[in-house]
Image 1 (cartoon, rainbow, N blue to C red):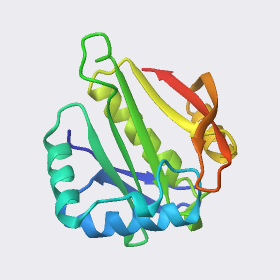
Image 2: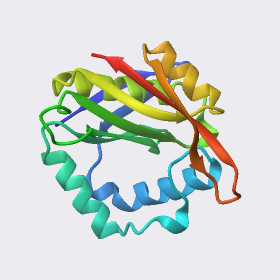
Image 3: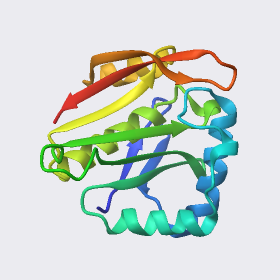
Image 4: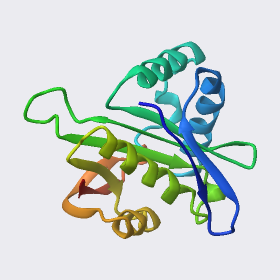
Length: 181
C-alpha cells in the first residue's frame, strides 16, 4: 500500500506522513531506540530488539509490497519524528476484517499534532485496505494517547489490569480500543 500526505500541525508547520523507505532503516532503528528510552508505554525494551538495518530493510520492503498493511513514518523538521505500522490481526477468514496498529512519536515532539496526523494516516490506509475495524492497545496511564484515540473516534472495549509487566515488576493496565471503519 502506497501512502503520502502532508498534514498541517497545530503550529501551522507541515509534517509529511509517507511509507517507510529502505533507506530509512537505520534512522527508524535509532528512532525506536530513542522512543523506548523515553517512555515505558511501548511494547518492548531496547535489549529485546534484534533488529539490524538489513532486517529492517526487509521488513520495509515487505510492508511496501503488501496490499493490506503499511509501515508509515512522519517527517518533521527534516527528520523522522515517529512511525506507525498496521496489519491484519491474523490471516484467518473470521479475522480478516480487523487490523491492529501501533505508533510511536519522539517524546520531545508530543503535543504538536504529529500523533494525530500519523493515526489519521493509519485510519485512511485501513479504510483503503477495506478493513472494517481498527484496533489497538494503549497503556491506561498514557492519558494523552487515550485522549487522542477517543478524539478520533476509538472506543474502549476492554481492560487488562496486568497487560504489561515492567522490568521493575510493576503492572501496567492496558486498554483495548477499537474503531469501526
